[in-house]
Amino acid sequence: AASTCAASPGGLSTNAWGEIGAPARRDGSGLLAMPGRIVRNRSQIEAEREDVMTRKTLILAVALAVLMVGVAVAAWRLSPKPGDAQGQAMVGGDFQLVNQDGRPVDQTILNGKWSVVFFGFTYCPDICPTTLQSLEMAVDRLGPKAKDLQVVFVSVDPERDTPQLMKTYLANEAYPKGVIGLTGAPEQVAAAAKAYRVFYEKSGEGPGYTVNHSTAAYLMDPKGRFNRVLAYGLGPDETAHQIGEAMRGG
Image (cartoon, rainbow, N blue to C red):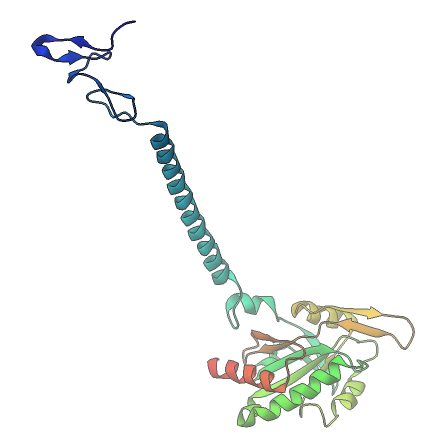
């Protein structure tokens, strides 16, 4: 067999790669250690590979976390906030209806006061009367600020809810004083509901039919712009708190 080392001038040895240095020797593991080279065993190489993979995994995890945070921040910035331009664009808009006195009105009735706009109908058995009663108690809790708020009840049952019927229905002492009732032709009601992103649908046949509809109310600022949703079942205390909070901030 060929030797891996050979003599060189000056008494130094040369190895199989032509390197000049001290004679080759075996290290403690029995592997041949050559001058000028670092000889590593398999466990060392595997350990280094695992270390590299661990570092790559850590870097990837950090990068992914930063990306997720960036996406979350971007989503928060793009999401509608109470009173911002996007929120205003989502709810509200032009409408042409008639009030309970039979006079034509439009979206300008919202100007100058905070308004709670709620869609329902006079034959509603539960949600509408419950909401109107809750709003009356919430208005009472507002104290002096109540003068700056109006409640607007828009019918989603134009077939039955005539101005006169609306006027009689809203005269109930359990409902907010001065509540404004709005109705109109079916196409006018449909346009108003679309502007406020309100769902409604006639259910059943004959004179006893009902109307399924959205249950939330919308708080609009004195410029007629959307501020926030007042969810059904919020209760008088929380409703008053949210309206008062909007008034302080707006």
